[in-house]
Amino acid sequence: DSVPTAAATPDSAAAATPDSSATAAATAAAAASTGEASGTDCRIIYYYHIPKTGGGSIVRYFGQNPAVDMLRYESTKWVPVENKTLYYWEHQDSASHWDKYIVPQSLTPGLHFIAHHWGRYGMLEMRERLGALRAAAAAGG
Figure 1 (cartoon, one colour):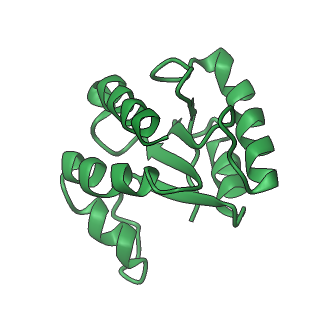
Figure 2 (cartoon, one colour):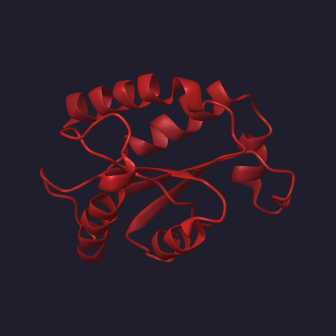
């Protein structure tokens, strides 16, 4: 499964601006195409998906790339029980979903794409959450 996200790197702002999303996507695509993340490449991409803005294409692109770990941060009644991980976490509160699944998965080695769908609560806290995630990622190398 894939989900779109805006770029979050140790040197970027806490949340990507609309003008920076194209650059972030290009940087992430370049890193994903090599399957490696160097010290200057994005390792974690955060994307806030607003329906009807082409986000599904971004999510599919990254979701189909085996070098990218797609982390879906959303809540929808349409996730089938067979998708056990997403089904479980989407039925938890947003703080638990973020703190106990998204953050630990994002801090593992590799390239990660966090897709935050507009239906999942937590947007108001996202600047703070992304700042803490960025600090944890920087501390971990």
